[in-house]
Length: 203
Image (cartoon, rainbow, N blue to C red):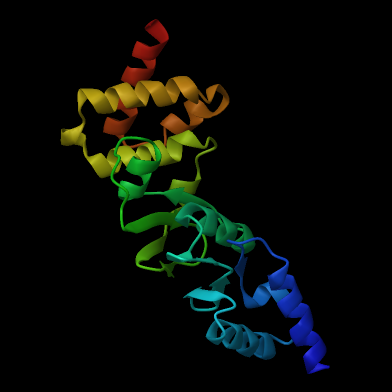
């Protein structure tokens, strides 16, 4: 019986795409303790890679080393399994929205789910617990735009940053959710976005 379970779990991982994550809950029809041990054994074989307690990824091995999925891809998978929401924050949000070209070594997201740290080779991914207000936005751009601007700081906004705000609002106007979402932003961020939205509409 155990051999059959091993074969089924190994087959599921074998046929999975590179970059897919696996947790004990990925194999919910089997005994939890047994699956926990089995995944640990598979890691020792280097069949899968451990990125956090109880979380493994099928990473691609290349001549240059282990090729992991992007932090965003992994975090989105975890959020989907946890039925949680995520928002890029800090320098991660700045980079994602084009305010900065610098890719942070420690990628950071707010989550409505379980806070945790993931290790992708020499990179760290941090999932911080966010307060409910962070997840009250209805649009996709606004929560990350607010996080990016807060990271830059009120006294550090440049003309180039304002130009980028206008570009983002033009590309993702989010007409249906804007009026709701703008009220959730800090006052200075709200004023900055409204100012650049008006400038954009007048062009």
